[in-house]
Length: 331
Image (cartoon, rainbow, N blue to C red; front, side, top):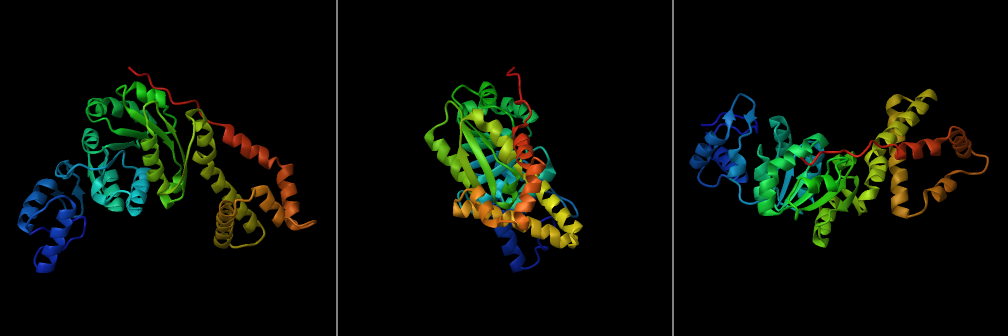
């Protein structure tokens, strides 16, 4: 009998419990009578009072997958969830690796996919590999998976900020198809704004794959890599600027007597609705602004105050500020 564990399955003392456990183990790749599932589980899990330690055997029992994530952080989890919900890949076709057990448990809990601690295994099983690690970790990972990439030739997609295509291609076999993508944090709510650039060996089919993957949780645009720093400053960092504006608008509402909670919701909804107007109408934001600002009214007075403070120039300067490209020595 298995005691109640991390996934909150009851003790196997009745038919319903056994059936539920069989279904659970089947999803994890353990097929067969519940007794065989139990024995497999003993090898796969180290069961404690309220926690499962992720073991490599989970991924070993899998068949070949379609999409693999190296790095199972928040952005990878959110995007993988979007891909599964859009039915681009089934849960059983997605796998993620990470050195952190906590990250793997979080990814598995959110997406419902299998996980492993082996980066090499991701390349072995998946024709599409997404690098979603911190930029400083990229060279370590690429050197680790080099031989498997050479043997399997997967499409390698990187969302590591600031790591250039040239840098990645220098650390991978010469024929590797590389695509660099810059998403942003609203992917966590299925509303990312991302852009991608193609490596020397990437194909038109690879571009279609990227558009389907990242289009499942927002909008994506194909650009030259020379423009990726501009994307980083605009849509990559842009959410922080918008959050600051929402906060400032809410503070202004509080100064005028509104309750904090109401002011914050009014400000956030105003930004949300305004953005939706731009996207849905296709009209220039300047024209939409003019429709709000009536002659001699409060809106034009507020616009005048913003212009006096250099509002436009401040925002433009913020977009132009970006760090130097992330440099990695190939050797």
